[in-house]
Length: 575
Image 1 (spheres, rainbow, N blue to C red):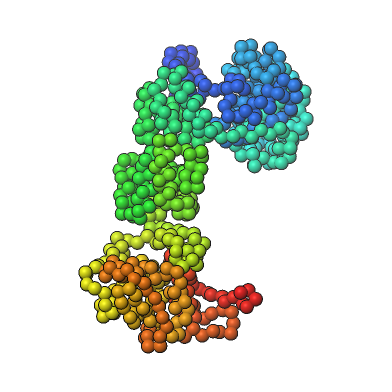
Image 2 (image 1 turned 120 degrees about the vertical axis):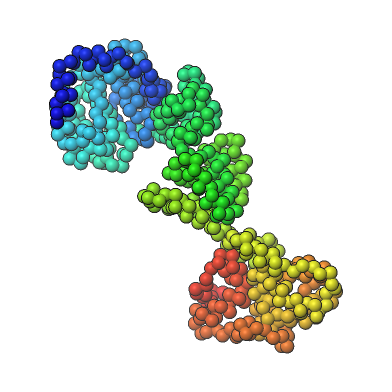
């Protein structure tokens, strides 16, 4: 208390001395966001639908008693409200543009006008504040034609305050105009919205923010690289005020020569090439290098929250390239279009959509976590190990045509050890001529190799054995009770994987056929009968037999690593 009292006494005793000290060091720098604030409707960028309507209304003397300006931050709502106030009170008469030179225009621009009052609804949100406002609007304008009340963040008013404001807003005294500005119009009462002319401000496009930054940099003698201007505009997210504030900050950080590296170090977000590097690791399923990537990010001092925001944006851009609209919608430098298209083609729209969905779902847990690096590592490992997706219709169509069309790649990423085992299963040519004895001795190895290429064919070949072998033909014998498998193996190029493996080992170039014989000895599982229950739903044992006997269903199960829970047989009417 003693210190506070002493400070108070000093201020009271030496007011003149303190005033002189405060004027000896005036601020010489004016923030760019204030210096280049729009002063006419023509200066407001990317809001032509608003400024044109207001200019026409002013020219036609069609002035409303209340306006509502709604839109995101930094889109020009308050600036447009001030321009409207100047146009209404300009000494040269009401017109589409204020002159900017008369006393009223200058007074409003410098904040000295008694007829233009800006109210912050966040700190004046109660019913008592609205009652005071209702009393002040009764007085006539002091200098101009209109008293203009600009209520910023009007959605912050309480419900009682809104209700007290209704009558004044609908029928204000002559010469009073209200301009309400908000970023959340959905929080405003419908009774307020119905009493205003509403104008929705749009986020400023990235290209227009970039061009504005380049124009201002030229006037301020700032060396701004093209990619640096793009990065600032992208970070601003549709807000010109944010872009100019960030440009001010970057100039203070690195001087008048603004580089892309300085921006990334300042905002703590990697550039697009680092995200492309990460996407390559995810596409390869390399979870180990993915963890190293996160450790490297932390070591370089990047902000993980900013990185996460950039990751979502990067996956979105990749998805846009995958669906064909990347060059027109994605916010990436033109020099990286080709690399983004390559990444999109490698992953595909389905996988990118799944990645983006998963990353979006984990955003809030990531932000709330006290171990953000751990949450990020887990997410990236999940993305790296994510199964690849295929179009089921393409799979079934390919199987329905007997395998003439190449099937999509397997959806499940295999580890290095799994790939090694599959490679080891491929039979190696031993240079010997193919005989029935050789084929019977190596039949298990051949089936294992077929399984590595196409599990469905290997499942159909269980219980099938070679019965005759010549230089031109190999005949396989199937059990007499395996009519369905015999039918499927005889269709199209279903046995093509077997033919290829035989050709690799013994240079066999003939044909392979399957016949029915009672002498063949299928394994126990293949020999099981497939009873037909009277109902339409099959039992668990029937499901297992049906899956192994239906190549389409087996292929779908293998591709999607699925479990068949229930199979319904079609009724005669349906078939």
